[in-house]
Amino acid sequence: MAGLLDRERIIAPPGYNRWLVPPAALAIHLCIGMAYGFSVFWLPLSRAIGITAPQACPADAGFFQQLVTVTCDWKISMLSIMYSLFFFFLGSSAAVFGGWLERVGPRRAGVAAAFCWGGGFFLSALGIRTHQLWLMWLGSGVIGGCGLGLGYISPVSTLIKWFPDRRGMATGMAIMGFGGGALIGSPLADLLMRRFATATSVGVFETFLTMGAIYFVAMLCGAFGYRVPPADWKPAGWTPTVTRRAMVTQGHVHVHTAWRTPQFWMLWGVLCLNVSAGIGVIGMASPMIQEVFGGRLIGVPGTLADLTDAQKAQVATIGAAFAALLSFFNIMGRFLWASASDFIGRQRTYAVFFLLGILLYASAPSAGRSGSVALFAGTLCVILTMYGGGFATIPAYLADLFGTQFVGAIHGRLLTAWSTAGILGPVLVTRIREYQLDRGMPAAQVYNTTMYILAGFLGLGLLCNLAVGPVAERYFMAESELLALRGGK
Image 1 (cartoon, rainbow, N blue to C red):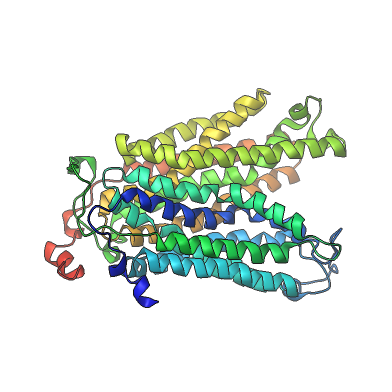
Image 2 (image 1 turned 180 degrees about the vertical axis):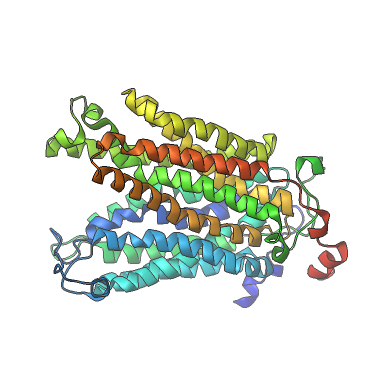
């Protein structure tokens, strides 16, 4: 088995079709992208004991008691901690294991990701069966989160080396799968839970086992579909025409050196600030459109608080549909913006993200006050294309600056910016909203200040992006060092 996973076993023979590699990467990213869709499990799990309605815990039940209780249901706030665990361990594992991935190759990393992500589902299923929340956190949150990190970065370096002529497009093809995983996984999970539900079970235990098996097999197929090109491989007929002025290097910076450069930390700030702003919108998209427009969403006057329960249900359905619409634009932005960056450059692409983003975030409150649902929704949809595009463009940006030899490992370390943003963005948005509501501000206006603050985040991101310049020659590896690293090949 070890021989099947060795890097030497997956070096492609002459004439190999490089277009066979993106589907392998997409298979893995579509599986781990279900992390975005885990909220589909929260309501059923919140009544895993009560079945038809949640069995409330005693008022004096402490935090640790809720982790091990078998007599009352979990709160959704406790279940949703899974999101924080996902993104924390995604960034942490990508940073820790990025160098290992470069040494052993994407197949071994992809197999490890399959065991972590699929195995996390199985361990979580045990936690559901025994009603132990800590097992769910450990299974899907910690172990599954490590699978997220390994699966996320496993194709990046490989695709960039296969597509030196279209780096942005190549990474966009794979990373768009991460954004689209929930669009497939959430309906599948809902279908399975309905299929397995009984009078004594909400069907989540069986759903986790089934989805864990499906994801495990699909990710193994993707991992075994990986091939790496020989060193310094180039597409037939393609000759690099880039110059140092365009900030595209032909050299390579070691992963242990890259984090010491100012460019790395400027890009860390670029990614963190762009993601913080975007993830803040994603987290509040559904309640925001409901609270801003209220009854106007269904053609009746009044705020959300003025509506009947039936009308609120209609508005909630529209809010959920709006969140799904934003997910679609998030996915498309990953491919379209990353592909566009191949022609206009990475730095210019991010400049567009920040300049256009500042304009759109700052104008969103006016769009809400105008009463035009289409204008408001359109503004947020464009914002989400740039959120997704930022994820897909950053690996190519790193390859341009630091070379391709360690781009996977460098990308892994940079993803700690995502871990930070995954906490900063949602916490900031929810705290500001609660603060303003507590002081009597109308619900339709509580998001205005938030959008202005997020626009300020993008302003800081623009400054970080403008500060990025070519990496100094002293940071690049010597040719002899590079040859020794590659075993003289």
